[in-house]
Image 1 (cartoon, rainbow, N blue to C red):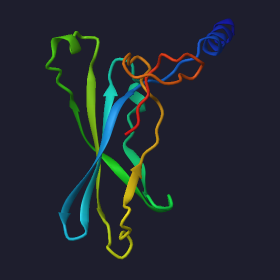
Image 2 (image 1 turned 90 degrees about the vertical axis):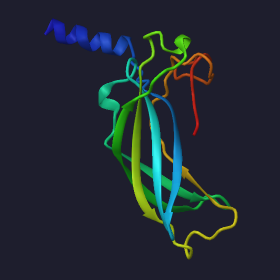
Image 3 (image 1 turned 45 degrees about the vertical axis):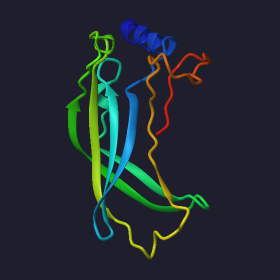
Length: 152
């Protein structure tokens, strides 16, 4: 009973922050006609990130720019996982190990629905930023201003 109580107290006293995402990007590739492949590429920190944080799928939303109207929600499935090679010695001192995760799906963007001249944007939301990045600053949960953040 004492061990359980001590473990619970330690978990409360020392909060843990997941910090597995170090970057990412979307790709929209035209296949033919109104068929496209939508890719979400995520860069995952193998050292600071929890392996359980790798999702098998990612739900992304497509919005119209003009009025921010939700047009569609698409599930992208994890298709591939590969190591990111670091070619600069100062970047690859063994303290950085990154995996590239590729989530993808084919979709049809009909001209009848997707015809706004101002265009559209794709959004994906997922915690957790990698707060060990030292050259990007944002507000860290808990109050310091020396933490990483990214938008893509």
